[in-house]
Length: 150
Ligand code: UDP
Image 1 (tube, rainbow, N blue to C red):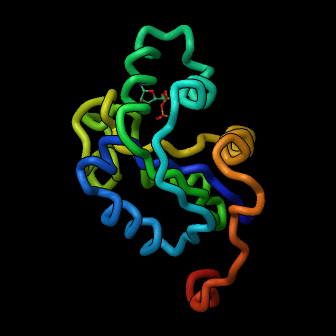
Image 2: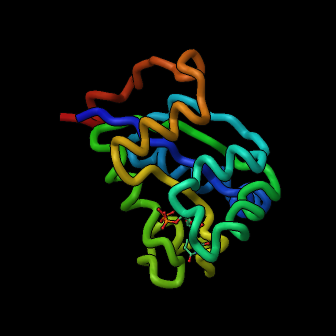
């Protein structure tokens, strides 16, 4: 099933100039970038996005990290995109994430884990609406679609 996921390269990825390398992985995989925006996330938006963690001890540090420099926010589309992208991203703790995953290859600390990706269809829907207007999401075809999908 064609799905859309909300994906965000966090301030460490942007500040460490990892955007191109990470974006290439999604393009190489055959996924389609349908929206993209570099933006500095403010405190209110960070708190809303991570609302489910508001009672956790790491919450304040997380909000501080996410608002500390620009993030690259994206909507990425593809067949089973949500689970495929989560697999590419790897475990929350980069030290435990498999080599070959984005967090496994680029990160060391849970508090600096490079990238966010929606974990389920409901959260993807909520997060996409939180970060993008409908008209900012592009509808187009990839010319090699028949070589990516059977
Ligand atoms: N986080 C943290 N410390 C922790 C757990 C999580 O700083 O002990 C941060 C980390 O940036 C993580 C985010 O909170 O990506 C959201 O946590 P979640 O458990 O939802 O992990 P994810 O879905 O990002 O893998």
